[in-house]
Length: 278
Image 1 (cartoon, rainbow, N blue to C red):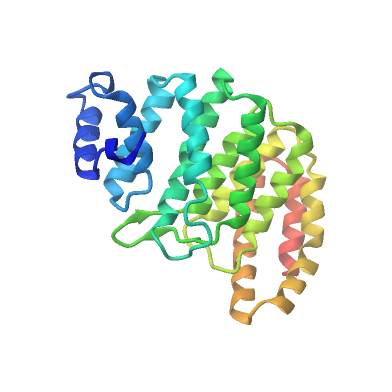
Image 2 (image 1 turned 135 degrees about the vertical axis):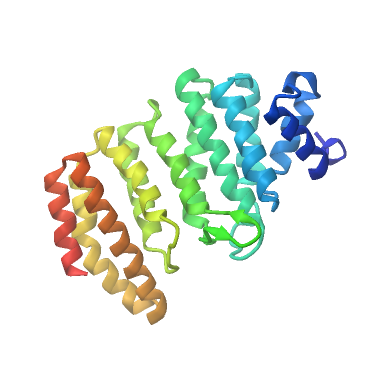
């Protein structure tokens, strides 16, 4: 669909408000045009349009109403991975972060539904996993709430996508450690996380444990952490090094608390001992 057929933000907002309020149904409109317009404007800087309308209605169409067909969902996934997930990647203060961040939330919805319906082919699922891992590694815009524009929260949102990916029955246990290490590396980012990113990054890690990942894989990372931080101290400016230390301490403290509820005393002790060393 070319851009000439995409609804402008103002018109889309009015239509989506009517759909949300129940005064019109998606099927009564040009459905494909509406869906493509939602995807086109998924990174709008209008927080109400982006968050309360586009994302909320994608949730309704995919999870609650299950209105979108498997073919539509596959096409949404392919388009998002190709054009939206890496849009403006490498930028740190531009509005492109909203497109990337809300693309990962859409991917999370699609993964959730694929767990129920299994419509994504094996190559498509493998490509999705590879692109999520690449995106997690490349994302450097760690802003949470952006004044006047609302939530970006790219790191928290991609963690949500990984949470769904880890729960997917077709994810093989041989892939668990790769995902664990990718999430762990993102904790050690040299910008301070301010909006509970630590807890969101922990969700897929606990999902990995629930899927049967050996606790020893985390112990290995914990054992190597002091040396890893020492290397960071040599490589980073002091301010950035202390950002990394702050992020890791906050992460480990949250980890310790959640492990208590999860009744994993061995791992909880390992986290506690590591905390005392850093």
